[in-house]
Amino acid sequence: MPDTSNIVASTLDRLDHRILAGLARDARISNLALAEQVGLSPAACLRRVKQLEERGVLGGYTTMVQRKALGLNVEAFVQISLERQTPDNVDRLHDAIRGLPEVRACYLMTGSVDYLLHIVTSDLDAYAELMSRNLLALPGIKDVRSSFVLKCEKREPGIYVV
Image (cartoon, rainbow, N blue to C red; front, side, top):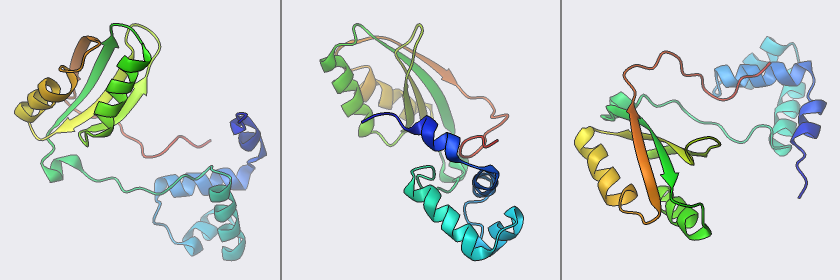
């Protein structure tokens, strides 16, 4: 299937961008309030939102849950290097992280590491157990380096909309 992302992006107009920016700020905004913000009738605004959903521009709506309110006090970024990127090594890693709710994101990277994981746990003991039982035990792992978040200076929901 060909990549149509540039085609979709090139068909978005100024009103689409304003709708996306409004929803990025507050996904729970009412259609009436969003329509007022972007200067459309409620019916036209709703029609555009539905079109953005159908075209795959809007892929869902989420809530920003404050992790510390749930007792998730440790946040880390973990760099993983594989011995070799063989299908078996890659599949084992992918299978392992899919089953770990503590792994909030996993990125395949270029450069000196193969993967970057975003992990949250309740405390360092839980982090150590997660690593030793689940990730460090996987065959094919060459190196793991963890960096712990001391303070988050900026976190924006969604994607930057021009």
